[in-house]
Image (cartoon, rainbow, N blue to C red; front, side, top):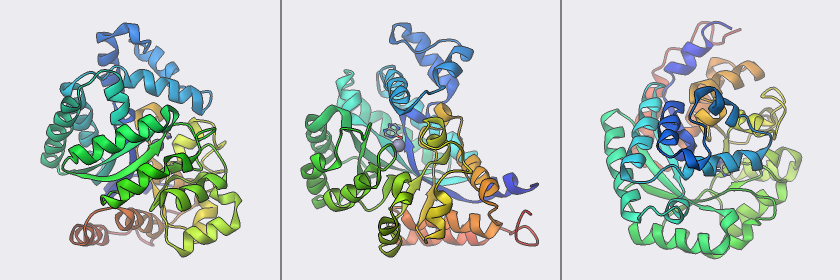
Length: 342
Ligand code: HPA
Ligand code: ZN
């Protein structure tokens, strides 16, 4: 299907689900690993590729936390943010909501001020590159209520420029969403949007819980909703967007292939689907690549790709003025004749 990649590349895009540590480029991970070989992250490119070949979600998370432990100070945070911004700019991605997990960095000994300083200077660099960044501070669920409390306190006390949402990541199995209800309630009362991961590695009950207990306004992944017709209907009727990360789901073994991904079922039921990368270099993903992969697997037209890009604008926490600007940028893109790639 010629033209699909060029079209997906040129399409002005928005990324709503990407983890800061998981966005580190392979050269950056190697550089950090060489500085601290005892952390167990390979210092050789071939070995790193092997390290990033995941048996399952738990294996992925172990690798992810090992990379997290390499990040020590404001300079490292700046390097990650600026690197992500450059990668996004090169793909015509104009705006991203980036998940940061302060509790993990604080636990690893990074002072809060270092984290905030790196985020601030990195965000300024992103603006120079034409990419607006917003932050989601998320709770690493495996670390329990203490992580919930400390993430909440840090978010509300510091309230850095660009902080828009409050999340919950990590494993879902044995880590019920409802346990984090008090922290989400307070974060929402303070004006932060609720965007927990749910239904990535467990069933639809977790998504229902994210909606009912955490007031989720968007769902991180939501993959398993496809098995629950009432949930599909609820998500569509209430226009609760899903932050779908197809390649991530394949690489952590949640779905066998993009073609088998329930994204088709979500779209068929009128659910608001957005495409995202999660942890791009760890999964060999790019935002443009997600659009291409889904278009190829589902046989989408150019217009349907445009709709997906528009969904991400609509589902973002940008203000209406910025949304309108981005929508008009998307509208100006020339559709390939005769309107599809087939
Ligand atoms: N799910 C949960 N936690 C995570 C993820 C994810 O996809 N990526 C990084 N932390
Ligand atoms: Zn994620």
